[in-house]
Image 1 (cartoon, one colour):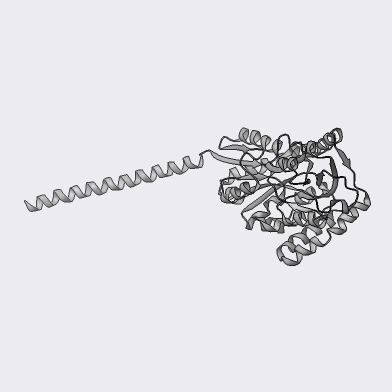
Image 2 (cartoon, one colour):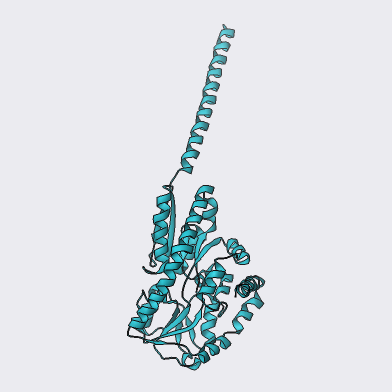
Length: 348
């Protein structure tokens, strides 16, 4: 009797073990299906900027969304234009934290999280925007290595005008800038440039610049014309000084973590698409748009000041020590700067 009871219990245990085993197999199978579903899950890519349409970053990001979503239904692109996500600092912090995936505005604004990128704002590093665009869209291993170490990836660069100055005072010589409050970028080299020119650098978010001009908090703005013209800042100032013209490159800055975590095929598709757009129609449009912005200024009720060779020479001489300041205090900045200078000189 006891032997029979033992056999029944043993049989029951065997059935339970089989059920558990089958459950585990079933669970493993569902897990495989889950992993497959996860790879097919729609990925959201968020892209933000501070510029106003039809500035070139806005045209490019809209074209990217259209083309990429036509190529694949596995990525959906969300655009946050004209500072709708926040100011430059908020966007850069979101890029590092992973809540934003792509940001496009001038390189100097990234200095809050990647300080050595200020090297790109050293005055007269490049002779004009064309040279800056050509060099930066080539092989720049030292710069790339640094940005990757900060969790950033400048996949390509958008053509932009040099940094000029809108202001409420006519400038014929460097002395005319003395003591003026000029809004510039958060990049230390940009601030040093304004200081070296005799003015006072002021930091304001993009959204507050117009109010600063209206209220007299600032006397002028140091920026590219594709920011000042769509924002109609020329309506709030009397003069447009086409100087100093320091390079003002705009990176298509991705979160490196976001790129690294993409499936290989999607990463390749995304990178190929963004480069095709930026280096093709994007930069063609950018050159055209920069010229259209100058045309708008010419037609507006504002006096455009063409700098004399003497004024440009004064500006270059006044800012000459900025390169030494940064390259002497940082081996990494020196490494990036020297690489860019070598590439620049070889390209001339």
